Image (cartoon, rainbow, N blue to C red):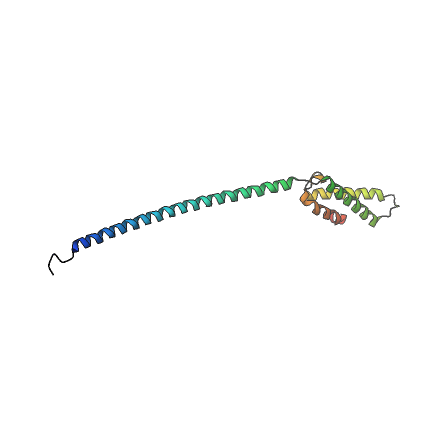
Length: 154
């Protein structure tokens, strides 16, 4: 085989180097693209985390505001009437257990029991007027009146 017939090894090696360089450039571009995507994803994840924290703070603020509103809503007129009826009924019941309707002291004792129930009810719920009891405590107030025993406070 003559030298002219032999393949040009240098040109083959040179072509191989050009292909390797081209592949290296493609890989570098691919890596750079992956870095940009990673950076974008990380940045968006951080923003999402910040937004989630802000949302959580807003939810907590709203819960506090809702609780403040609940705490500020007092009994309706209908609920006040029901409470008055319960106190009237309980004071009569307590007095009937101890006196006969015909006794002269009956009305005096009904009034005394009624005043005691109102007084202890207001003390129990820490209010100046029974109408200032919170609506959310209405059922507890009714239960307090229904289970009231003067002996517990003497």
